[in-house]
Image (cartoon, rainbow, N blue to C red; front, side):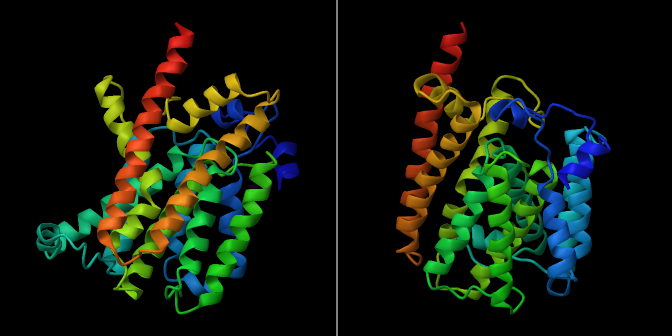
Amino acid sequence: MVYIVNKFNIFKSEKYPHQNFASKINVLPLGGYLIIIFFTIFDYKNIEFSFIYILSLFIIGALSDLKKFNSPKYRLAAQFLIVIIFIINFDVKIISTRLQFLDFLMANYYFNLFFVTFCFLILINGTNFIDGLNGLVILYYISIILILKLSGLNFEIYNNNFYIHNILLILGLLFVLNFLNKIYLGDSGSYLIGFLFAYYLITIYEQNPHMSPFFIILLLWYPCFENLFSIIRKQRFKKSAVEPDTKHFHQLLYFFIAKKSKFNQKLYVNNFTSIIINIFNILIFFIGSNYIDKTNIQVMLICFSLITYLSLYFLLFRYRYKKIN
């Protein structure tokens, strides 16, 4: 696949921002292509009811990677249209949040519809926001699957437990290729992973009503908060909330490790930074998985994660831009 893309210069040898955090070689955003091929060949029958939505999101991401769909606002509008039609057609709902005032609002069909759509969009774009280091996104979602499996939850998707093993297989393949700096997810891959996991985790919560919904929030806190924090941060500095920048947490941490470590290659710094972030999240997930029905403990872990993120972010930001000045 890489050979064909390079031979016909499909991506026109564009220098993608991801490469600045890896190496000087041309790393291609082919992750989404592998995912869509996987679904088409191996799992089409399991997801044929939603394949048109998966394909539509893939096309939006692929066009973005090809620099043919450059407007973030129009991409967000297209995502909104696809997601809201999907939610209406398949009656995707969040039944209970264990917060009385919010459950009262969620009883209204239209509020529930737009709240669920908002959650999908936050995760889809948050996943794209953290796709800046090798293995960061992929290992993050592999960790979620493994933690859910270890928790002993009912974990069938489409009444087929084997399906989730196929997801692990394709994510494992993507992780190896990404970690070795052969390909990365790109917009197409991160959009697909965010969309699929938004639906999977809502389905898993419905199948396990004893589980606190805040455990699901804990599992997704990082990409979702990265997105929300980025919007607030950009508005604070009067920047467009939808335009990309290089002030995300993983980018600041990469810079710090690059300056403080003895690694002499960008790829090593890249991979090490990704591992550090995922180790923290895996530990948080593991603690939470031992108290999946305890909302108070899940809220404490979420708050601890947010405080840790914000504390480190401001320290790293100060270090990064103090050095520049």
